[in-house]
Figure 1 (cartoon, one colour):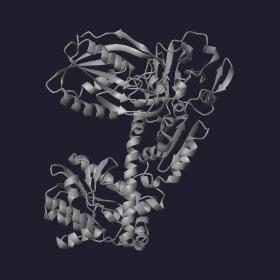
Figure 2 (cartoon, helix red, strand yellow):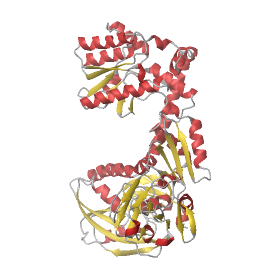
Figure 3 (cartoon, rainbow, N blue to C red):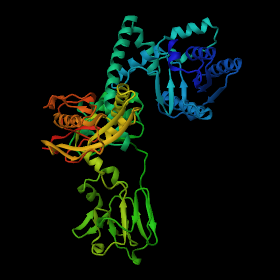
Figure 4 (cartoon, helix red, strand yellow):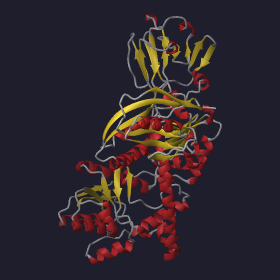
Length: 599
């Protein structure tokens, strides 16, 4: 099969999952005869009285060809009341992972075929689970291993015929012909009504769906990267038409995909768009979907962040959720005397109160009034004196008896402050171009520029300040002999365009040199038109322009760049060097700024 050459490499070592059925035995023989390096793994679930015969069949083949073979026998007492197929799947992949670690490989090859693909599509349709990929992917990540499936293009009958034609012994699992499990029912009942024409239509429809899904996933990647950086994301920055797909992708990372229905995603979107600032939704397998104001994330329910630490004397210490310092903000400091020790610093508890200048306050109400996200409330430090009285809730309240003394200890809550980048990110209406996309484009432009300037020296002239990140990235991919210089010219101040002002001129004499102007954005064309004219008057041999962005709709002067990274719509963009009144330059992408930020 052609897929072998496309998916498998002779020099790689693979774990091969073999049940003893015709599918996996055919794949075992194909890979063995072709000379692939394989470690055979078989799981005996001991649920059928003849399951030992499956094990013997696999072991006999491996013994005949001197192949390493590992068997995991499962005691029936291990199984709980939950879905057996889910339990078996986890046990199986845990076994693959263990053997893979022993041989330092994470690649597992399985014999899923086109009949399995068809069954999967039908089950996904029945479950209304059609947001993601339909069917089975040739390569996927499952429980920490990379699963490769080279037989998806062939039917089960092909594999059965292979076994007969090559005298490969195999065993039929009689439970596959029953209807107790969903897959068995689909195989033996539902698909009996499908003729070949209907199956081909189903496969074609699924293929078209998967092409659309791949395109959508490419658009989502920017937002998934942002989510993974902080394990949360401001959902308002995600375009409305991509939100359902984004929810599916982050759920898929922690929830078995068949459990993610379209109805579940719709309910989550309904909840996060509600007026409630904090929402917790319990999902399958101990997972919780969390909304905290505009931020959303998925969390494991088993996480327990409670803590309680006692200090016998003044000490400057660091803990997972806070640190004790000699300096800090007045609202996170308190004066503790000898009588206050031992002090206790712990997580909040139900019923906590603190006596403030404004009266007795519930700590839970302080959290609500100050809009502290629920996930941060669990770890917010509470400071008690030796009498069990709460004397400080950092940044939120201080006991009236400790209000007027200069602090000698500061309890600094880790992650108390929102970073400037987080604040700026909230001002972005839409991420237009990711940092990865810019890097890839720079590599592409670098190859073109190298070809055009082959054998020549080039003076790169960066226009400060916006071009700096783009110029730094582009230069990494230039093999041409280049030198650097910079000009600080301006035709923008705030939003209104002004005439060209040269604030910093070049140090290099450009006479007789090949100059390549590096710019962040070609907009009206005024700046680049004037700079190019200036350099030509200084007798540069040639002057060309490379721009990261080209906003053609904003053009006032007849001006074209010789090398263009991305053409963009007529929108106010910031990030990756572009600013609004000197802000947003450090954002690692190009995004559209919300109108209320500059109007």
